[in-house]
Structures are given as C-alpha cells and as structure tokens.
Image (tube, rainbow, N blue to C red; front, side, top):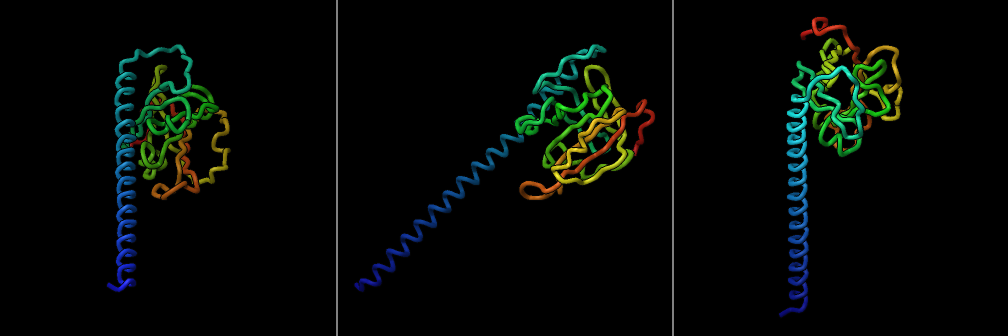
Length: 206
C-alpha cells in the first residue's frame, strides 16, 4: 500500500474524530444551556407564584415597615399590558432574575420622591415595549395601593443617572435595557416616566 495513501487516511480519520469531538462538545454545551435556561424560567415562575400568594394573604397596615434587602415590597401591575410582577428591594442579578427590583437609593411607594424600578427586558419588563402615555400602573403594598399614570418614555445611555434623581412630587420611573430584542449587552436604557394620581377613577382606560 502506498505510504502516502495510508497517511491520507489517517489524517482523514483524525479530522473526523476531532469533528465528532467538537460536535459532541457543542451538543453537550447546548443541552446544558437549555437546561439552565429552563431552570431560570421555572425558578422565576415558582418564586413569583409563592410570593404573590404570600402577599395576597398579608394583612394591610397603615404603619410603614422596614424593607430589607431581598424583601418583598409588593406587586406591580400594568393592566393594559397584562404585566404583573412581584417587586423586591434591591437590584442584584439574583433579584432581577426572579422579580422586578426596587433601586434602594430611591423613594419607596407612598413616599415623596421618585420610585425607581428596574427589570429585565427579556422577562418581566418585555411588555413595556408596548407601553404608551396614559397607561395605568398600580403598585400594591402593605400600606395600600398606589396608582400612577404614564406621562412619557425615552431612551437614554446607561451612564444617564439623571433618571434616578429625586422629584418634588410622587413619581415612578421604570428602567429596562434597550433595544428589547438586542442580542448581548444592550447599548441603551428604555425609561418610563409616570406620576401618581389621586384615585383609580382618574386613570386612563386605554
């Protein structure tokens, strides 16, 4: 047999073995990623269901309570968008994987100032891509329900911290990444500005 022919066949077998190895490696990585993604979704749904059940059974009180890191503040709802999510104190990656986060340096619902909430664009805050001026937002807490109406939206760079500035009234700011369908680290932030209104009857029913 021609030595060159044997060498060629060995080279082909080696290449085939390498390709099979690479294929198996990518297949295993894909299965692991799908499994992790499934776990993240299931964990978030389970957390939301448990905390919503707990929140609905908590008695309302007019006395303010101390909100600790990772503590549940209440529930946020945007009826027109069918958006409903538990709001938790803090904005760590672990919190945002399971809930909407309240940025600690900002006001709490019911306090004078700017209440700032943040959420992932590919989970709880994805419906915000359809939000518009006049939409109603409700924050339900142990101290009562607070009604807001959307005034405007804007897109800003991540470095723009002015959206977190304190306000003289009772305002609400929602923050998520933008564009909504961007792959990778999003270059901008989508901001929703809303203001507290006197009663649910004053809200727009769009």
